Length: 306
Image (tube, rainbow, N blue to C red; front, side, top):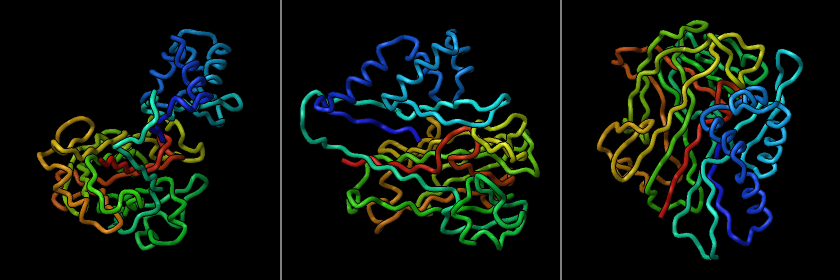
């Protein structure tokens, strides 16, 4: 999951590593190409127009600075190194002093839901196997669900309770950001399979969007090799702000963050994802964890406080 890095000028060793990593045009190009996706060394070399050996050296410098991370995955010829960006923003304070604003983030596994309404086709997968039986809604609350990296249902909803960190209790957030990867749900897959998916925050409808399909014509970048159905989704970012509710940079409503009662909840925030009963395209959804799909992240909820 990409994060914001905040440094002080006193963090000399870390500042030097980041400064070195950013002081090169080719490395800046690599970072740009990793903004919305993960790439292997060969793909990076081709996109930047450099030899693979040079790309590998640049990757080591970026890894050392903590700007990207890599993992070894099975490839067509042995293994390949898949690289992902770890930072959205880097801030370096030139003077010491306590910041007025602070933020918190919680990464929630897709199997850690607290409520659901499930209809076949439905199921769950861990990174290694199918969990319990396909198309058995009654199995969704078995303990093994906590290991799920992919969950799917043809309609209904899945709800999560995100804890409010101690430092945020009894405080009024000025911004909420919720990010997740999702697709529609068709038997096996169908890339032309629109589904109207709604997000609720504390039981208040925040946004409804139409997901175009259930994607499977190519493999998900981090989807396990043994899985042959739904491969990846699209990345969605919901923002509750002081000026309205926004999804993927498009305003959804005039509801502001104050309208969701976040300062009135005791210790958690409810996020529900699902199809409304009267949805025109009621075609379910897949939710992807950090070991499935194109994006190495779980469901991520971030809060920004004054």
